[in-house]
Length: 315
Image: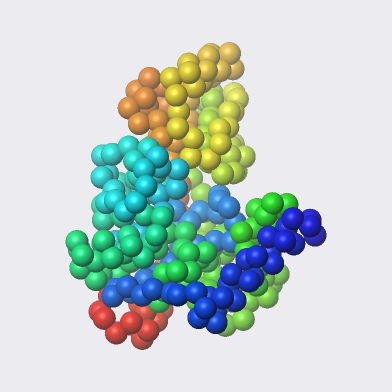
């Protein structure tokens, strides 16, 4: 193991032991908290999974809000996301969740403070905690951890992408496996195992496209486009959560022309970060992520039964 990864792992394990022993305080909100998290630094599909779960809760008529850090925003403190606002103020993923789900999304570095704000404004309803596995300061009534096939073979930061070792899956109530991920190599114990099929809704065009994105794992997006039959004349990737500048737009238009493509294609998250600049890149196809949770009715039943047992307040 990389010596720096070994040091990082020792620090993570020591911090978790302090929480497990009660040496570090865990704060509880009035309403039940369902955490959706992962072990890696990004690209596993937490945001699409949260949106999928939120849509299932809405179908049941269950009121909820979303608590998120608001990664990448230029502001600090607790704030209610304005769906018509800017990613610089709220973060791209909270904006995407607010627009897709049409429920309150509250951002804050301290998710307990964000939850207190949400409860003061909307009452103690169910909270979906975005990227919550490592945010142990906030107590949760159900922990969901999303795992990809690459995670089981990865190593800890900084040598790899793992923020926590695979042993941290012991804190999960449910482990969600994406696509062809096998549970055999994860050494799971009593956790529920759920499966999701993750893909995209490809653009309906036969023309050659130039694809670009600023996400954690851009190659996956490009591969999905090709697998869906989209003709790619070229690709360009930016860092995750990238805010596009005018010079980037000019460069993308130039690359489109040089490649012989007739259109551009990107992700929903990138469209958030483009904002009104989307108009300057037309024709532009914006590709949504498609995530299907297998046996979703049983999944929601199990989730609600557990949180009602652990938190007697109705959810």
